[in-house]
Amino acid sequence: MSLLVSHAAWAQTTPAAAPAANAAGKSQVINSIAVVVNDEVITRQELDERVRAVERRLTAQGTALPDRADLKKQMLERMILDRAQLQLAKENGMRVDDIMLDRAMMRLAEQNKMPLQEFRNQIEREGTTYAQFREEIRDDIMMQRIREREVDSKIQVSESEVDNFLAAEANSQSAKQELNLAQILVRIPENASPDQIAQRRARAEEAWQKLRAGADFAKMAATYSDSAEALKGGEIGWREQDRLPQLFLDAINKVKVGEVSEIVRSANGFHIVKLSGKRAASASKAGPAGVQQTHVRHILLKVSQIVTATEARQKLLEIKQKLDSKSASFEELAKTYSNDASAAKGGDLGWIYPGDTVPEFEQAMDKLAINEVSQPVQSQFGFHLIEVTERKSDDVSQDRKRTAARQAVRERKADEAMQDWLRQLRDRAYVEYRQEEK
Image (cartoon, rainbow, N blue to C red; front, side):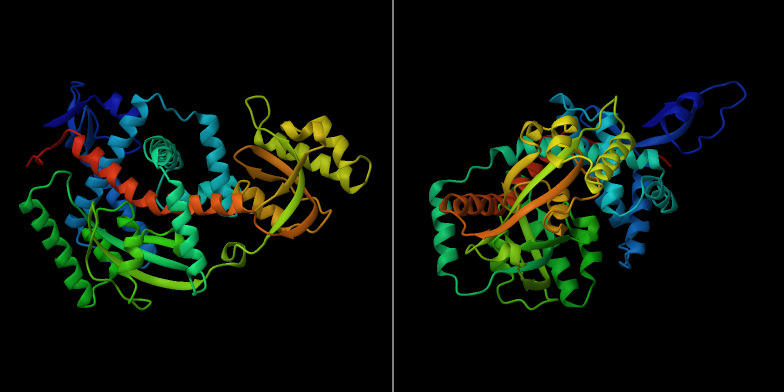
């Protein structure tokens, strides 16, 4: 089936140049449907654009490109799953407005240590329009929200699981480690027949045999894997050992760095796990014996339709000048200007444990000396001036140990729960593939 649109309508809906309309002004066949997902379509042009973008990224990373037909098939499956998630998010009334999207783009630019304009230029140099990139980020935020609602919020951790985790940690003789893993997942459909399971096992075996023969793991992941990380070479990244699924830990128990595991089976499919790296856990994560607490205060200016990010940052620079010149106290300025509930206490947030606040705030806070005031720091809440007033090392209370253990168990469960939810979502979706017209 072909997608028929007028030249004018096409020009409004895609950045790609459309073929000129004929003299009679009739609609032309300028694209075709690759697949129908529930009540929406994915066109071949959308698919081709996404494939080219992934090819550029893999080439830039030095990853060997899989066969284009395999890559196209992988990308189409990824787009189907993304579309199903976005549809569910919209059905649940989720929206990401432009103000929220602007903040997300500013955070991304800051994380890449670039001014926003330079970040925008870099995106376009890599072959993606800034408008297209913004919409991809909007979709990413939407999908993250629906996953949090449908998966994260439903993960249950019992007190006995916390007890078992703490007991195992107390009995462990080995130092805590962080592991850098990658995986290939060949997913099994829900309620799969024995024949379907055998077919999926054969596919995993094929990938494993090629890896044993020296094939590049990233290329094999992009070719065979059904996991969310497939088009990133299967890379899961660095994780604390006690926050990884037990399945992965068992799989790599006797594996050396750089090697891959045997094929292991989970409820969701067949996994091949690569141990890419191993290191001691950082001091802030390693031991429960003691942690550094920081007594901190801040002045927060929120970004709104009335106050732009530029205005908020500039205002905080002016406030910092007053602090540096000692023409006003931090407490006075916080009470006058801060948009946070802590303003009434002179911006005092009290004693902060690691992980109690957002990463951007914590990273800036940890770099400050006692009584030093930061430059404006951006977070999801707005812009902050931060001052550290005291630091101390404190034993972790029993309640905090249990909270940390509960979080670790939750993270262990999260990967499997996410894969299970994605599998169910994919299996429930109405998907109709269309043959390409010759």
